[in-house]
Image (cartoon, rainbow, N blue to C red; front, side):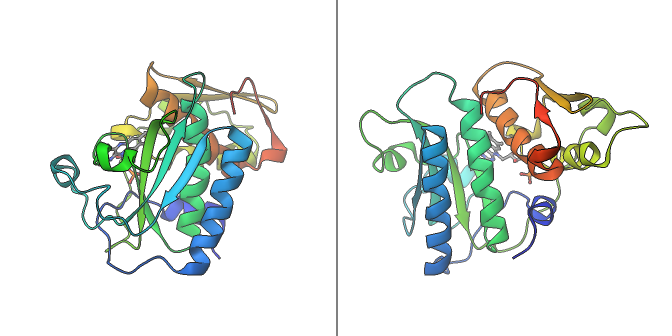
Amino acid sequence: MITTMQAIRERHSVRAYKEDPIEQSVREQLDEEALKCSQESGLTFRIVYDDEKGFDSALAHYGRFRNVRNYILIAASTKQNVDEKAGYYGERLVILAQQLGLNTCWAALTFNKREVRKHLAADERLIIVISLGYGVDQGHPHRSKDIGKLAELRQDDPQWYRDGVEAALQAPTAVNQQKFHISRQDDLVSILPGGRGTLVALDLGIVKCNFELGAGGENFRWEKSAV
Ligand SMILES: Cc1cc2nc3c(=O)[nH]c(=O)nc-3n(C[C@H](O)[C@H](O)[C@H](O)COP(=O)(O)O)c2cc1C
C-alpha cells in the first residue's frame, strides 16, 4: 500500500468512474475505518455500495459526475460542532480510499439529495457526501494559492512543519477556495479559517487531517481543536 503522504500527493477529485464494483476486501477495510471514524467522532460515516441513484440527478450531471455507484455519507444527529469533525474524519477515509486504489470527490451540492437521504435515519442530518470508485483517470492537481498566503514560514522551520504545510496545500477545499492560514510557535500549530460557514469549517477539518498526516501527529499540538 502507498504511504499516506504519497496518497495525499496523488489524490485529486475524480468525478467520472468505471463500472467495476469495489472489491470485497477493499469494502471491508473501508467499512472498518468508517466504523472507527463514527466511534471516535460521534458522527455517522456510512458507505453505500452499488447504488446508481445517489448521483443520478440533473445537478450531479451538471457537476460532471458520471457513473457514481458508491458514496460515503457523513451525517450527525446534532448541529453542534460537527462540520470540522466531518471534514477531518471524512478526509481520513478519502486518503485510505486513495491508498486502496480508489478515487473520490467531496460533494456538498451535486448529488441527488432525496435518494441519498433514504440511507439515513429520520434523526440523522446529512452534512456532506463523498463519491467513491475506480476513476476513469486520476484527476489533475488543483491550482494552489502561493504557499506564503496560506502559511507562515520561517528559515528555521522544522522539517515536520514543512511537510505538514505541503500536505495542507494538497487538501481538497470547496470550490478550491483554500480559506485557511497556518502558523507555528515551537510545537504549537494554529490554523485559522479565512471565513465563516459550513464549507469553510468542513475545509478546515480536511486541511487539519492532511497537515497531521504530513507532519506526523507526534511532532506537534494544535493550538485549539474541535477534533
Ligand atoms: C467541502 C467540499 C465540498 C465540495 N463540493 C463539491 C460539489 O458539490 N461538487 C463538485 O463537483 N465538487 C465539489 N468539491 C470538490 C472541489 O471542487 C475540489 O476538491 C477542489 O476544486 C480542489 O480540487 P482537488 O480535490 O482535485 O484537489 C467539494 C470539495 C470540498 C472540500
